[in-house]
Length: 397
Ligand SMILES: Cc1ncc(COP(=O)(O)O)c(C=O)c1O
Image (tube, rainbow, N blue to C red; front, side):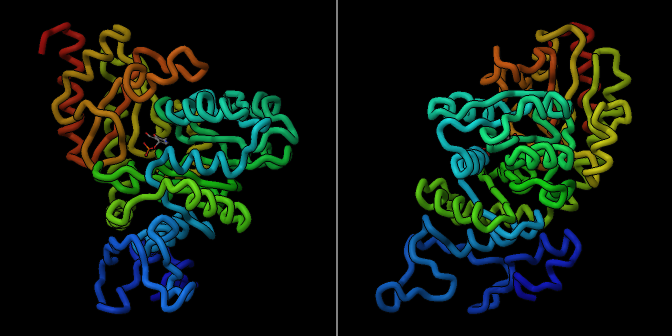
């Protein structure tokens, strides 16, 4: 099967993940994509490039091309672009779309680094922003400035509050005002949610997370359908050069091959953990989009295949108790990031979201975020229970 085979593009998600961009190497028959480390490519006479049109490693690399083909297919888009980090992907999209004087609508909760980039980097270059509760259609409509707002930036589920935004509804609001809708699909992964098919114009990923899946690579991606936008992104990708190295691309491709089976287990384990947390006396409230009491449950059912591997909850006893808990788990490792096979625990207010303190996106001080891995669910639940018991008892453990 070749990469752009219509048969492949019509195939199931798992088949696409394992085959798109990944046909055996025509030269050697290698089943796994070769790792092309060369930074430059021979020209057979000036400007006469060989198959693939590779000339210099920043502008293109065969291992990266395989990843980019695969990413586009996973999201059902026409063009995929890989970057050296999720933030580089976000930055490239924002700068491809916005000019000084333009305006961006952002969510009232989102990854802290996205807010920092928009408020403190693009803000200095004259791009304004308004943060708004994207679950409120009227407030969102009011925040969009027709003709000035170029982009509505959406994250769903959000990091770390796990708020669910209605992608179809937001696409309608953005398009009515002549703006684009970008969706950061990092928490869901393309296996659980495909924003382009719901009306979004661009999808962004931190491939560091579920796509890589093993906490061993930092990367980012943008996938779009529109050829003109793809061209602008491709231009900036090369002009600014925030590209991933070939081995990073290879690692992300390796992770993607097992994305579907990993996500199924992440979701099952997260459901188990959310249910177990809900009945523990040291827990205040649990946020998991798969719980019928979650305010975004109905929208999540409509637009997601399953509810993801992230769970957030508040701890009775406030910030002190939340921080205490993070130091007590044994299987849940205290660390930033998410989406790897191993379970992680963190305190967003002082770790991943320290950059939004005192901003409209500040997160509750008593909140703990879990990236639920694919270990045995009973072991994970027992680990949390023991740690929560210790917090409730005020022990030194
Ligand atoms: C939702 C979300 N988007 C983007 C990013 C940024 O990605 P990276 O750390 O790969 O630059 C993160 C990082 O945690 C994230 O959680």
